Amino acid sequence: MQEAHRNMTRLIDSGLVAKDKEGELVLTAYGRTVVMIIPGYDFLYHNRDFFLDHGLGGLPPKFIQRMASFQNCEIVHGVMAILQRWKNLYSESEKFIKEIMAQVPLDLIETVSSRVESGVKFSYIFASNAVVPKGRTQLLQKIGWRNFISKGLVERRMVPEVAVMTIFNEKHGCVLFPNMKGEPDLNTMFYGEDREFREWCADLFNYQWEKAGQFDENKLKHEV
Image 1 (cartoon, rainbow, N blue to C red):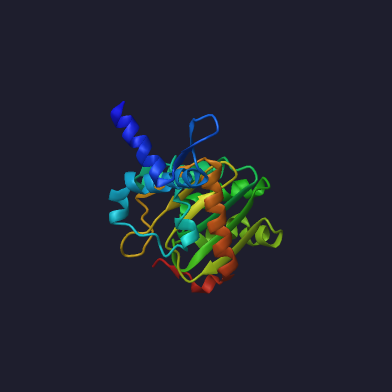
Image 2: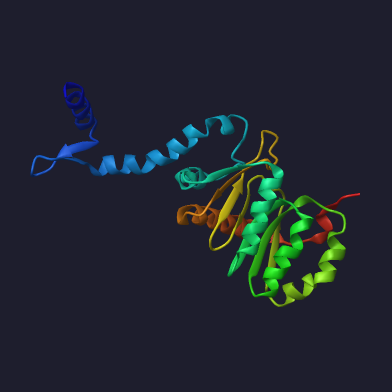
């Protein structure tokens, strides 16, 4: 009881709590604000080992300040596990798919095209220095990608480089941060379903979309 009393006194002295008219201890407006900020620090603290060798890719402060959105995310490890999650995300999309990508997974193009054929709108941003896999051009021609674009079912833009990748739909989202070289780490991914997390992904996409320029296929690097 003595220790609890000392802690309550400290909270009162700090301005975090105060006594109401009935004499009950309640959070002050300042205290409520601090409590709302804590989850962001909590997420960073529990993932400090990850962020010791990963960066935030030059994210604007407004995104870093909202890292609490990641608090309930699942961490997915391994390239194969990550690709499977991407495939599931594409397959389960009913309204839209949006993504910012530095890599082009050839095996998932047909999965995406099948959803586009069913009316799902696909919007993506590529890095101009992205390396596209062999056979991509022929596959896009086979599935009629240009036709999707002309119908407005597919829209695309390009940025000079991508450090933070994201894929999301109306249900799920994922984010991949860069390693210390500034390249997205395809071995570790944060995957979540919370509305706040999907909003974070959507805001990042919209931020990059506004900055992005016209898509130029000739800028992409093709595997030899």
